[in-house]
Length: 190
Image (cartoon, helix red, strand yellow):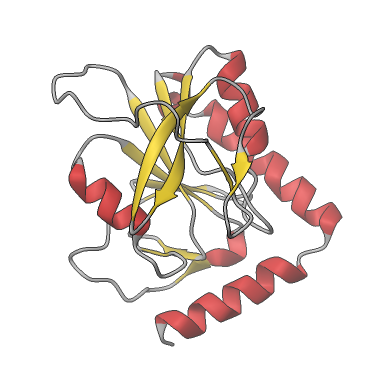
């Protein structure tokens, strides 16, 4: 299958997931993620704000706030993406795609290079494989962003169990997840 065929297949599967099952799967993903040492020990959480049928991050963000973690969410700015710190879910604005984003009024995250904070990046995706390869939406925002700061974060993909595939097509420019959390299991990527 091509990347575009996989994207179409997974979007359709996600969109057809019954609401009650989606809620159950999201709770399992949330509980599995927050039980991980990588989550417990992170000082700063970089996460997407879930949209449509994506694995839910709203409750994860709320949990991070309750644990006094700093939270950064992305904003697309032209062909690039930057992360901005938020202190609540209030005040996020809808992008032209309907995705909740920060206003971008403050300064975006820039690595100091000598920061000792533990950072965790939650990755959205339409499909993942056991080696951490991921197929996103096709614009390359996350790959370009993370290539600016290699080895900055522990990278965890969030997905429903049916989004895990055998082998995904990948290139050297594709950034891999270190772990994948699904409603079924934790995958430690090869």
